[in-house]
Amino acid sequence: MVKQFWNRWKREYDYKTYMTAAGSLAATILYALYNGFLGISHASLWYGTICVYYILLTILRGAIIIAAKRIHLRQLPESARDRASLLISFLLLILNISLIVPVSIMVKQQKPVNMTLIPAIAMAAYTTCKIVMASVNLRKRRVSSDSLVWLLRTISFIDALVSILTLQNTLIMVNSHGENMKMFQLTAVTSAVVWIAILLLSAVAIVKGIRRVKSEKTDNSGR
Image (cartoon, rainbow, N blue to C red; front, top):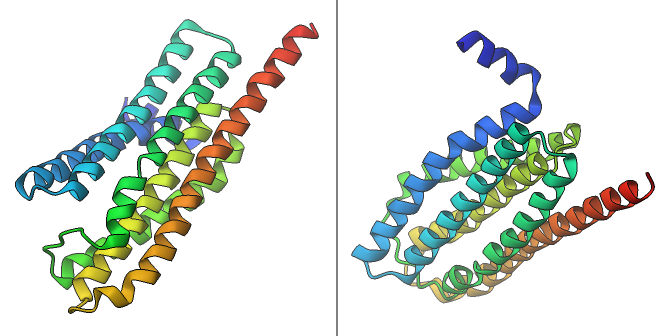
């Protein structure tokens, strides 16, 4: 069983992507619950909105995995994957639009941070690994024709961008000493750039999904 799993993991890119996404669900849920706990204990809107974001992110990833499984078991045509991918892409856009609330809180620097420099450095190392892996996988997604795999890799990259956004503001507040106003412009600009990049990725996912669905309809009508 283990050998079979490992062989599929090495050979099949789509299988590897789905298994990785399934494994990341547990970590995402734990992180969401952690932020929810902090939001309640500190009466913090920041932690509350991040909790909601990661809950929605978990739902999206879970929906993709479930959809892929059902399509495989029922042996549905590729068009079913494209339609599911398009629907989830619209939900992804809604999810990323909701980031305007925590981004606004970041810019105003109202996020409570009770953290020393050492955990912040550890978070920086984790975020760096996360963005590197997400970037590599984003490029590798071209080897797959599965639209749901493509969407999973896009979501992973967006997740990494959100981590960068969070890390940036955490480091600013951990290292600032009554000089938060001097960092306002930097925070506003960088937060806006990252958020716009996230929205663009969501828009690209929708555009590609529409093209796939239209292409499938054209092919079917031509038969």
